Image (tube, rainbow, N blue to C red):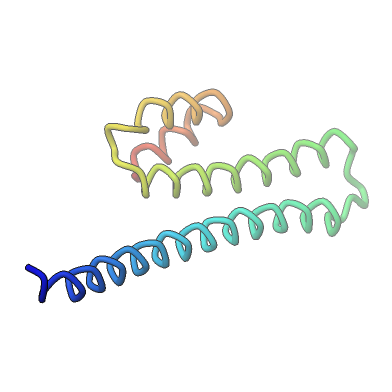
Amino acid sequence: FTLTSPSLGLLLVFRTNTSYQRWDEARKNWGMNINHTRDLVRMANCYYDSTGISPEQRADDLNHVALCTWAFVRSMKRHLSPEEEDELAFQNELFAKLPKQQAEMIINST
């Protein structure tokens, strides 16, 4: 046991470091995804050409862009989570925020 302890300790440290690196990489990628979707909504707000369009229509269109990007991120979160952990909350959130037909299409596709 005395001879194998250092090698066993190194193996344990290596596995711990590797798992932390994987977790950290996933965290960075998820944060980058969130930031890119926020940038997309921000760009839609900036570059929306409202010439000849009522303010109500503009607000409705931009709200639709924001909801679609939210649905994309929420669907990805659902896809990465265990089904039994998040399915009911996922469906409730979609039906609360999206039109019924669009929510059903997203649920049926996952």
